[in-house]
Image (tube, rainbow, N blue to C red; front, side, top):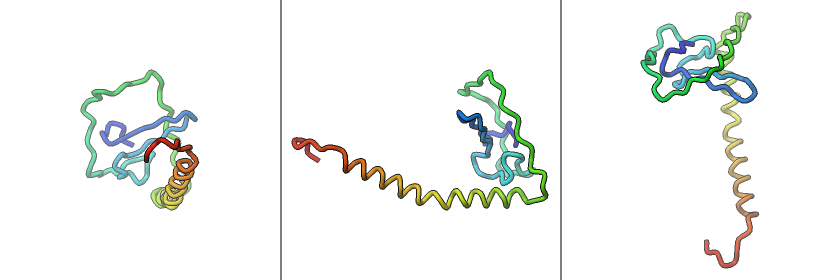
Length: 111
């Protein structure tokens, strides 16, 4: 990935896992590479407002060695995640409504 692109983002989670991605979702083979002729590539000119830590980010893991098409594999993984989202939203809403119903209402409080 082109880390100097203004659309490049990186997140490090408490578990130590690092996510590197294009904020515009234009890098089908993320986190290994961006398209060579990306139409939205813009060099980051300044890091104003950014806080740079003293820790070094872990190296990007090696690209898979097998001949499989990485973009197809990553698209399939994205489809799996996207298929779960509607069910997760319904479950979260149901949980919110249940907790709201259980919450004690005081008799003198108007709705």
